[in-house]
Amino acid sequence: MYKVAFEKRAEKEFLKLDSNAQKLIASKILELQKGNFAGDKALKGKHRGKYRKRAGDYRIIYLRENNLLLITLIRIAHRREVY
Image 1 (spheres, rainbow, N blue to C red):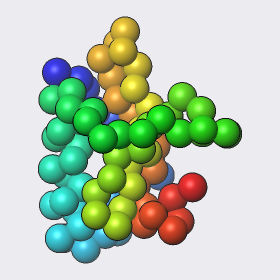
Image 2 (image 1 turned 90 degrees about the vertical axis):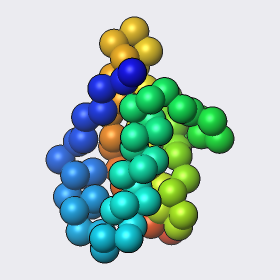
Image 3 (image 1 turned 180 degrees about the vertical axis):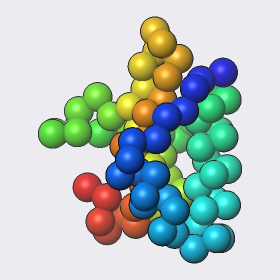
Image 4 (image 1 turned 120 degrees about the horizontal axis):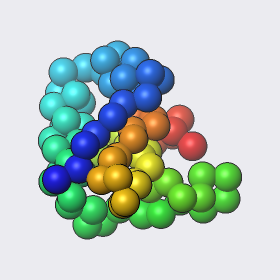
């Protein structure tokens, strides 16, 4: 079981979304908390070391620290804005 922490920016982005998008993203965050990383992609370039989880048209960008069992959510935004 992982601990999930929001960065301030990610928390603000999450709270601005409509309720349907929030429910979808919350379910994906619960999957991350349980350690379900299936289908997640490692990012390249300036985002090296971070991962992406798809949630409909939204993307959850996160940093996974295995030795601490901590997941830090960096961005939650529409796929055209997130990178």
